[in-house]
Length: 204
Image 1 (spheres, rainbow, N blue to C red):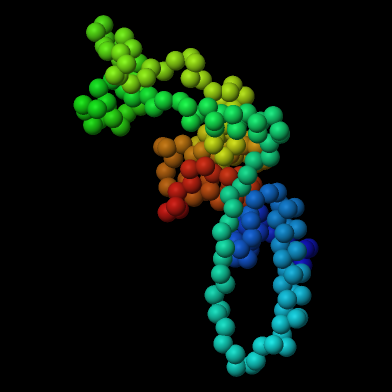
Image 2: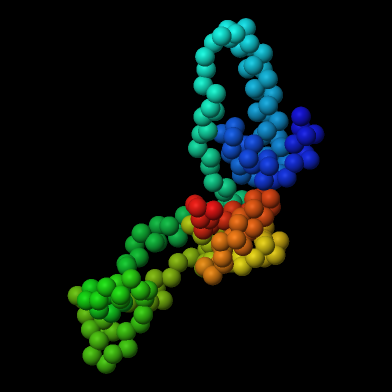
């Protein structure tokens, strides 16, 4: 049976794993080994339970699919410690608000902008105004460009961009301007290569 799994694509292997309620992370060799172990275990359970079933017995035909864990990166101890430190630093970082964010709804939804007005209370660092972005609020330099999951983000615009991604340490983020049809191609190709897509849409 393992030989049959070797001829399948990564996407087909992941579909089988999802149906069996097994994790879908790892390389193709890991997926094949996981399916082979599962099939052996099922054969043993079937042989043990065949005698207990009655010919006219009732049972649920729908298989219960459990939670499928998301793919995790392979990181060294130094990077793991840096990510943990960044998480602790982020808890102490204040929220940065744009000037007059409380007055206009459109400003509350926009990102940070440095105040430039001569009489700006925020620029003059009045206590009752929100915090300013400063050099001291920076995080660990080793983790710059890393997603909260531990993957290094790589912007993807088409399927060709996926070929240069290392699935063990990098994850894809599809550009906001990419259309729905091209997104489907990117998702299917990423599944074949075992690459995690950080902003995968639920409806595709």
